[in-house]
Image (cartoon, rainbow, N blue to C red; front, side, top):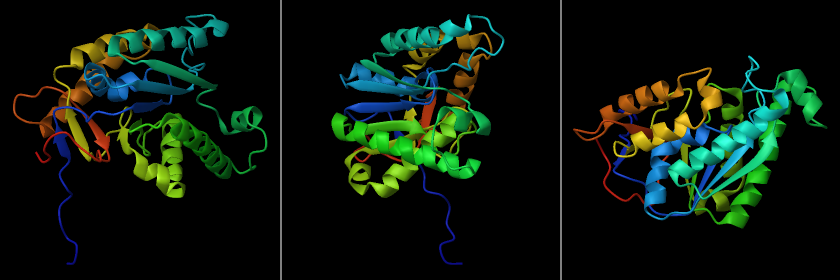
Length: 256
């Protein structure tokens, strides 16, 4: 049978290559959950890191622990606290509302097609165009984004937007390394980074999101996923972060 072969093994790396970094965080905390250990390594080697928080997290307090008009500011403060722990230099906020229903989507954004699927496609294309401007202005070498099959609507939409951008802007696609991180659903990785030495830092940054830990033990989940990813690493490694895609210029060898 032609082409009948096992999947390629991921690149197994002890750290990320140097470069100017952009992280697309669907909500404040996803940058830490998805790529926090790797970002701590980037910071340690002096790389400039910008996090773009796309949604503001307004729906992140369904039980009403905090005043409704304060939750966005609380999430922003938590993002800045986590950034300080990880060594992130800049955090930007686009301030889109999160977790919109099909009905709410049309209430918030004007001019969308009536069909919900076409409306989501238009939103993805619109965000892709905005991201293209960010890329042109920022000159980023590495982009971390939620991979395009994440089991969260906001994560999925941003992943689809990245796919759209890379297909329609080959100049931007070839200008950077694009690595899709995992939070809610495990990917088939092209790259796994050993974050054994930065996992403690990642967990401290997760704890900065106290408003979200009222609902989910995110540190427990991140530690479990990181421990699982260590199966692909060298002997003795305890935690890893996995990504769809590969760096254009990895810093060490590949293969398990």
